[in-house]
Image (cartoon, rainbow, N blue to C red; front, side):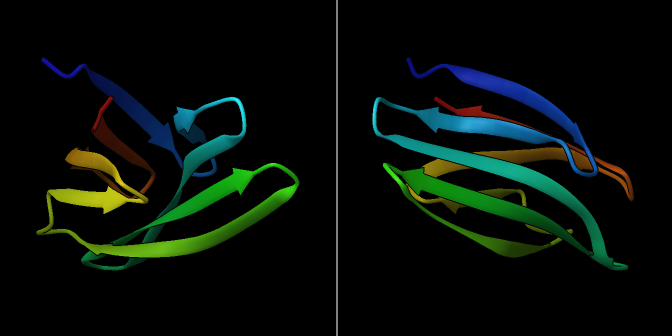
Length: 87
């Protein structure tokens, strides 16, 4: 059975979703972009290359996929988000 890891992030904090020898995927909680929308900044690096983008998620959405990683949103507020990552 896959392992579920629970994270709670405040604005500006990050959680590593995946790290291998040559690749890393992280998310940073960027707060509420609007009344019913929260924002996650996704960073993906491999070797000496990297990219980042904002992912805007409606408050009604409970599961998202970030670069083949599954996240289940448990709770969020204006300054925090709690989620589980399927590892």
